[in-house]
Image (cartoon, rainbow, N blue to C red; front, side, top):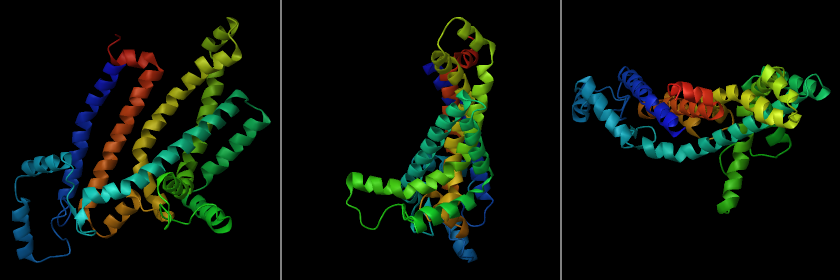
Amino acid sequence: MLKYALRRLAGAVPLLLLISIVVFVLAKQMPGDGLGGGLNPGNKDPRYMTEMREKLGYDDPLAIQYIRWLKDMAAGNFGQSFLYKMPVGELIAQRLPATLLLAVLSLLITYGSSLALGMIAGRNPGSRLDRLIRTAAYVTYAIPTFIAAIFALYLFAVVLHWVPLGGTVSVVTSGGLSSLGDRVVHALLPAAVLGLFNTAAYTLFLRNEIVENSGKNYVRTAVAKGISRSSVYNRHILRNSLIPLVTFLGMDIGGLLGGSVVIENLFAYPGIGTLFVAAVSGRDYAVMMAVTLMTGFMIVAGNVVADVLYGWLDPRIRAGYNGGR
């Protein structure tokens, strides 16, 4: 298993380098300085541009600039944000914890809910409970995210006052566990809305996988051998039904940074998503490139996690990747 995981990790390195090249080339096509934030795109004075480009080495060959940029990235130097007047690394470090909390809560809500509901519906196909869960999933699936966000804000923040309207933490907190709880309360509603669409889809997907696997020959064989229904379900049906869902987990890990852009702005939640929108509006290229690069790396990391989980759940996949050994 360790060998399989290491090989999958090594296979991701060329992809990461390719992503870095694409981001670098895109940055070089932008006006001003899309890489280090060393040039102010609002200053069009030719003398200023010439002096700064020579000083920062932007007239060097592209290959040299790319290697220098890559070394800076590896050292944690993402350039300078001219909009916030501070290093991009520090800026991201300030915003990232809020987005990570949002992402983790969203994943917990999505997979916890869809696993529970999918298993209930899958074990009781055609029952009243199954029909109720499927109807609720279809209705939820059809609701656009921004409509759900506005409705949730009105109901839970304005009418019921169960959660705050925006922000990541209250103005006055006592610190410690109380502060962590306060941050969770602030992130709970946007996380629920962020995971709403996926919860509905995965519930239906898991339910259908369980129903389909229940009728396969290996299940009939296990039942004919006298194995209890509960054992057949937990050891065979559920495990095989979860394998396709692992693919979604990998994509979700990578896509949460990008997917949080809309939600963070709708809920006035100051994380990486709101930072990215502000950077696009203000042409803060150093921040844009750092967030884009980070999102690309997260997508690759998510796929690696999905592949490793695949191999763990199904030894046949692991054996095939290792050449049948």
